[in-house]
Image: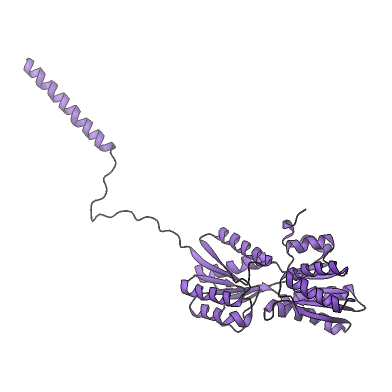
Length: 335
């Protein structure tokens, strides 16, 4: 009887050990699939599109703002890498940058050419290499296959400057005109717009017309020279704000208080408008240009959607104290 009881006890213990082993096996993690068995594929990472942003020079505050707006829009869209190419106000440098766009096989290019004749041929090469291109602010005339040009209507902006001169001097005046970089489409168009208005009037005389190359030092030097030979001028019209700000310095040093009109509505220029040092500046909405250009090229790269028009022009307006709150960058000026 003792032997029977011992046998039963051994059987019970053995059964409990087997049961415990089964429980533990059920709790263990599943084994890796054997060779040849199918495993779940990891989710594919979304493609990141590389888009070059080439401008004449990041030393110009206008292009610094444009680049910031492009990067902000890229962050909103997602999966976009912006590669900024600073032309350093040198056509040869910008041409080399765009040749690099081809060599590196970027997905797209947004470009503001320093000059049309100097940069347009390499833009054509980028397009011929199968890379979509949108020009911004400055045109590339004679190029075939551009996806779009996005900019402000610079002729209308120049006409707004001309209209302001006629309003200020209905009986006529002698003025100085500060031109932009020779060969740059904004320089050409803004001057054309100004003369579209003042030339037919017949009583506005441009007594000094020189290029300040869109930079402040150039505007300062040219204005100094023009004022020295024409001390009786009554106004200055500049093709951008950097030159207009240089003109303010020159006029102040010469003891001359005359209306000065700029173009671009930079924060520093808006501050000068607010304080009365600058009569006005033409707003061309560079942030709107930047975002529209990026949206246009991304829609094409990702979805194959071409823009409804290959020319998108924003309408500029002259900002003065009367409509100061309509400036795009009013929030950037110190209070």
